Amino acid sequence: MSDERYSFVVVSNRLPVDRVVDEAGNASWKQSPGGLVTALEPVMRAADGAWVGWAGQADVDLEPFDNAGIRIVPVPLSESDLELYYEGFSNDTLWPLYHDVIAQPSYHREWWDRYVQVNRRFADAVARISDDAATVWVQDYQLQLVPAMLRERRPDLLIGFFNHIPFPAYGIFSQLPWRTQIVDGLLGADVVGFQRVADAGNFSRAVRRLKGYATKTPYIDVPGVDGGASRRVIARAFPISIDTRSFEELAARPDVQERAAQIRHDLGNPKTILLGVDRLDYTKGIGHRLKAYGELLEDGRLSVEDVTLVQVATPSRERVESYRQLRDEIELTVGRINGDFGTISHQAISYLHHGFPREEMAALYVAADVMLVTALRDGMNLVAKEYVAARADEDGVLILSEFTGASDELRAALLVNPHDIDGVKDAILRAIEMPRQERRKRMRSLRKKVAENDVNHWSDTFLATLDGSRARIGWGGAEPLDALEWTIERPPRS
Ligand code: ADP
Ligand code: F6P
Image (cartoon, rainbow, N blue to C red; front, side, top):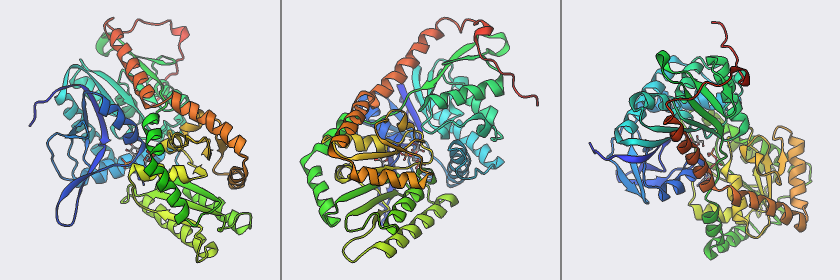
């Protein structure tokens, strides 16, 4: 076992690369999809630290290694860990619960027990490789117990946590049989970060209701154990973003621009290309989008000669039943729409169920006249920001669900309620018909936002806030505050 130690450690369930083994048994690494990796990869490439996480394959125990300038420290997960901790508790309990119960969460005690065990394994791995007084940044809902577990093992560490997905309102969160343990786990951090102001508010409220601790935005006062000094935790929003400049540069490359023109040509030179890019996940509202588009074709308000939809549906969590069902539903709908409205020369929908290199994603954004982001609930949605970054020509229209974190910043998009199918249909028509001048004005405003808040701004703000709490640790704990100033709710009687 290696005895490497680092002063900066990021830990997430998924690493930036997944290990894949081909039929001949040769192993290689491929980039893993998802917003967490998109955001953290540039941060880690620029930092001097280590990234701890699972290598994407069951039952392999790997030594630390370097990948594209990032030190990777793998944590092994067994086949049964994947079933109980990852597919079970993370993606069939927490994921639907935290996304406003769009799908029904399942509660199983053995899933919870394994979630605790695996979180402990991650905490042990981080505790082992962290230098004295190191900064540790724990990521996302799969690892919510790690902050408190780490604090117990290594009180010298500075611990941050960032939740990439929404944090639900108390009425929903309170369904979780292990709600108090989750809150205790998160309160082990010095700074708990969320995507939206509303998420941070939901968390503070859960703390008041479940623990009775005093809070005053953005602070939470956590009493010391056995009369020890109390700690002041910060809970606030840090909206995540992308590496705007490098995405812009990628999209501006001549080969990417040429590829975009080729895509338009290969699609039969339609007047309008609509684009959707999503992990195949029920939170993304892909079905709502297809319904709106299918109805526009049926009503005769759009024709496949003029308009085509490219839908990238990235494979995700394919062994979880709700994801399997979703894939069947979406593919049935795509087949129906193509069968009903397609012609020999023009398809209604080009459906792509696989991963792409970043160059191809950028070319798709450059080619698309209208980008459709119709998520029913989404922590942020980085695809929306990537589309904006790719449009240096100040053209293209973004249709954006108001239930995404991105809609807090990207107000110049055409904002829609994806449940309102007529509203989505109107927005699609409005986008297609929008005059160039209005497109330019909106895109300029969107681009300003994405340039101002890029991923460096996100990580710098988070880490500076975390560093600020190091100074407070030096005071020997938080000073007691005037109770009247604080919002206090008593925990429910049990
Ligand atoms: P989530 O984190 O829920 O997947 P986001 O929209 O925040 O959603 O981030 C998705 C990220 O994954 C984006 O950076 C997007 O470019 C990338 N991505 C999605 N689908 C693919 C794909 N098929 N191939 C390559 N990258 C993809
Ligand atoms: O951004 C939310 C998120 O769940 C990340 O935690 C994750 O990396 C990504 O989406 C993709 O999901 P998964 O890691 O389960 O494939």
